[in-house]
Picture 1 (cartoon, one colour):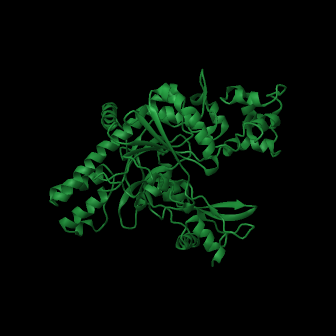
Picture 2: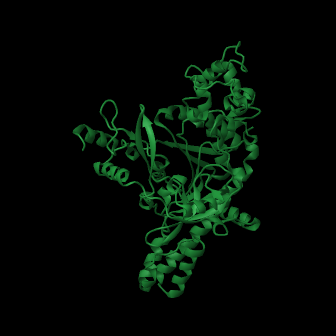
Picture 3: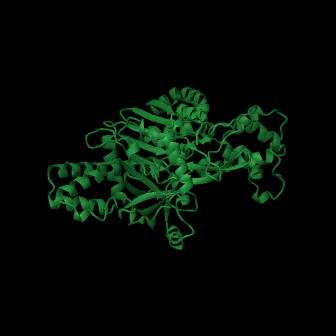
Length: 500
């Protein structure tokens, strides 16, 4: 199936041949849909902290802030090109800005151009005679092309999002200021950005120019680290007959394995507590208070749960008495919403204790959930495995068989979705770091249809960082307010009140 040249290519990417063969098998068999049995809702799978609990959770988190290493992990490799899809279509002659103006986002962009934080930079780079209201192609070229601001080729992290009186900020800068407000540890803020290899130098330069000024302004010290997605996590692409898709030069096409590949980057981080949040979900300082409050709330929830889990592990190690076994069983059922395997009750007390310790001794994630108001995103569901065990999982729509009326009805009754608002505990009760690769559910891949050079292909998405890659973690879902979710998917999202 593979030539010597192919095997050399695998070696250079550090991908074992067996891994490639496994991936081809998945294409041949197809991926399994998730067996969702109910949506997680407030009171049944999603916790909604009350006023006093909010205060208690914040206090719980603040108690450990200076004694544990806290890292803010920001996936930031996303290119900005998709933000400007409509502008590119005008620039490339595919659309006419003067047609159907009421639905034309490119026209809307032009009409509100002064409101964008990058407007001054755009004016400086276009010549003085440019009419910003009529010379669309010239303006779009100044904004997007390499000869202009190059926004069509930069990562989102480095675009100017927000206006301030004394400066205009990028999302990377907003993550620094946000991190200082909740993720400091011993007067230091550790932030880890995952970046694209081609943007790394630009990114580092931008942060270097920013860091000292923000350290003075925020009275803190930043330690910033970067990583790129490992080539060993790339996945093979196949044609519609499940044969390796080949480039014009005969080499096999590998594609980045999606967000799920970042579990490798996460696994390399030395920390006790890790906050995870996407690069484009930021707001100006005047709106940060809800974000800061609820980051601390879900972190406090994590600390409290971790304390309880560690104490149960120690209890079970000392004694496998039936009282402790029942207490832990109820905790798993009522707090972590885990039902045990069908054969649990047939085990001896010692076997039960060992089984429960194995269930408890895992990484922990608390996932913020917002009420679904039509935004796309993975949703919180109860998922049943073949063994009979049930757990809380974040499930993407692509992983659900929407042709099955029962599953479609479950989705219809879902109330919340995950905005990538996570806090993680990645060390065990002895303070030793878990190997996060041990807790991936490898079956939660999915296949998507793509094309390259006009030819159809099938691509494999690895288990997502906030779903399949963390599927076997102990999990809590908590409702957080919609005000903490303000992503920028298109450039005109920056015109929303939350970004002005």
